[in-house]
Length: 160
Image (cartoon, rainbow, N blue to C red; front, top):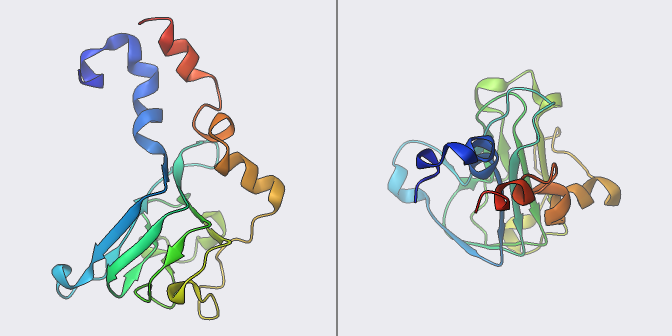
């Protein structure tokens, strides 16, 4: 079944596609295959700070060939969080790229929290990377608070 085939799931379609959590996974990057271009693990976009979508990577391992950026801002309110993940030495020192949103970095939420490994050295990361408090992190690491913020999953179950 495709989401497009279910009109009753229309309200869920955007949430399903854009509000994602990846956990306990290996992300294998092959930066050499992109040739002259930079390699990016994510390209997330939000059009406003009112939107609640974003990407969260929890307990992941990033391996492969680099250099690769953790993300590039597809739109000016991009949101990506890596939490307690392990990075091989393939992450570009800057970590993140504002891409076409240079000058609007204050609206971008990119964060690495409790990450480790040789690629997790933040000493040369972009200065605008966010430092999230424990309270701010809760909304990203708990599924009920991030994936199901407005109880849309329960609403969809009523139609099954």
